[in-house]
Length: 277
Image (cartoon, rainbow, N blue to C red; front, side, top):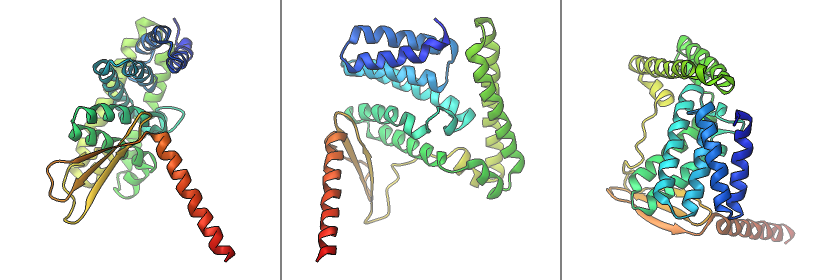
C-alpha cells in the first residue's frame, strides 16, 4: 500500500465499526495502522490509526488490547507534540482532534479504580489544551526574555515539519535517517528546555508543566474533574484533606446534552416571560 491509502482506509474502517461490521472494519483499520507505522510513525496520523483500532477492540470487549493501543497512540502524540506543538498535530486543534482518546483511556482507568492515573491523564489533556490556546513562544520571548530560546524552538519545529513531510514520501531505505534526525531534534529540544528552566524556573510552566492534580485543595474547597463519554460519563471529586477521591457515574454525553439544552430553553423562556411582564 501507499501513504495515500492511509486516511481512506482508516475512515472506511471507522465507518464499518459504526455499522457493526467488525471483521471488515478490523481488516481496514489494521491495514491503515500498518501504513501509518511504515510511512509516518510517531505522528498524529499514526496516533489516529492506533486510536481507531483501539475503539474497535474496546467495542468488542477487548479492554486490555484497547488500553495498549490507546497508550501507544498517546506516546505518538507526545513525540509529535514535543516537536511541533499542539496546533500542528492535525488540521484541527489538538483538543478537538484528540480529546476522545484521552477521555476513552481515562474511562478505562476509572472503571478499573485507577483514579490517580485517570486524573493525571485528564490534567495532562487540560494543560495541553490550555497551552494550545496561547502563543507559548510569545510568552517565552516577552515574559521570559528568552528570544534566543524561542527562535531555536521555532527553527526546530520548522525543520521537524519538513522532515515529517519528507518521511511520508521517502522510500523505505531513506526513512531511518529521517527518523534519526527527528529523534535528535526532540532530544535537543528537551535538553535546551531543561537548561532554560534551570536558568529561569518560570519557563517550566510553558515548557515542562508539572502534572499534580491530586494535591488537596484548601479547606472548604473541592476540585471537580469530569469526563463525558458516549456510553457513560464520570464525575470525580477531590475534597480538602482527602487522600482518596469520590467517583460518580453520570449519564452518557447525549443524555447530558439534552438535559442542558432543556435547561437553557427553560431559562430563556423564563427570561422572555419576565421581559413581557
